[in-house]
Amino acid sequence: PVDLIQRAGNFFKGRHKPQTLHAVAGIDIDVHGGEVIGIVGESGCGKSTLGRMIAGILPPTSGDIAYKGRSVAQLDAGARREYQLGVQMIFQDPFSSLNPRMRVVDIIGEAAVVHRIVSRAKMEEYVAGLMQKVGLDPAYRFRYPHQFSGGQRQRIGVARALALEPALIVCDEAVAALDVSIQAQVLNLFIRLRRELGLTYFFISHNLGVVSHIADRVAIMYLGRIVEIADTDTIFSCANHPYTQALIKELPVLRTDQRQFDPIRGELPSPIDPPPGCPFHPRCPHAMDRCKIERPLLKPVGESPREYDLLHGRRNVHQSACHLNDPGPMEKQ
Ligand code: SF4
Ligand code: MG
Image (cartoon, rainbow, N blue to C red; front, side):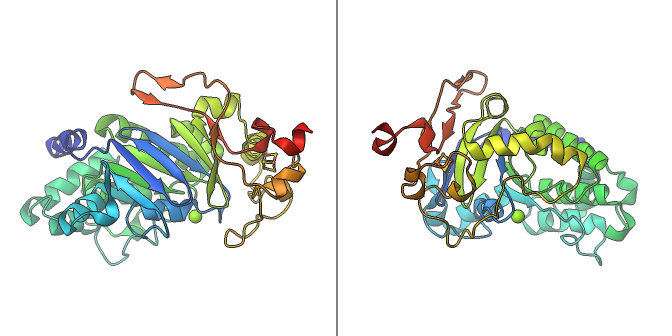
């Protein structure tokens, strides 16, 4: 069984590994192969929508998603199928996403048989290998979802995603429904699988603390836009955007009590009818007149300590969308 996974591992490192994935949907972001990119924002900020667009479940409302330099919208049926298999999603609620009437062996293996990744005759062995890989006892493969704990059910969801040999996994609040102690175990599983299989993750969460454990880079989203993006250390050591700064200030509070995630004064405005100018201005302690009129663009800021990541050969430019970085005529006069 382990051989099958190792074969899959080679597969990921070969032709299925995305070089760069661009998702442009009011936002623009590059995801490099083998990287974990965290997407953080309050519920309603559009991060789940972005995840579904990347997974090919939702078409982009505008703009484009490019994979290996080709627009996903223009792929022929075969290439599109390859793309959709190559990007799998793991959801928040492991129970509602598993069919209660199906045995675990079928939940994990069925799609792999349908897509001819494994023959029906070999499916059981294939699933046993996957279960081992995610820390589940293969002896339980004939059980049903209700016979597993929440953490185990999320492992089933992970095994089901891995069965399709993805290169990229979109995790949408993948640990949010779990107890804190179980969250750490499942995060560690994601980290181990990434190391062993060379996976790329798009890790979506409302919790910056959770994301900081796993992400190489973090993108902070507010009302459908990325307002700051940098490598994880830079986000914590020199956050630029007032919204990011507020999220960081709230982190210890989040750990000690379970109150609603609403770190900044005021309500989150509707993403359908965002405020003019900087969408954060109604809640920003530094808002200036200009912020109510002119939308700040994402621009490189400061000196990123690790602007070029030699290990991965990629640029890590720290970018933020705030007028404080770029005083305009209204402030200069
Ligand atoms: Fe605050 Fe203005 Fe910067 Fe927006 S652009 S975050 S309102 S200072
Ligand atoms: Mg969501």
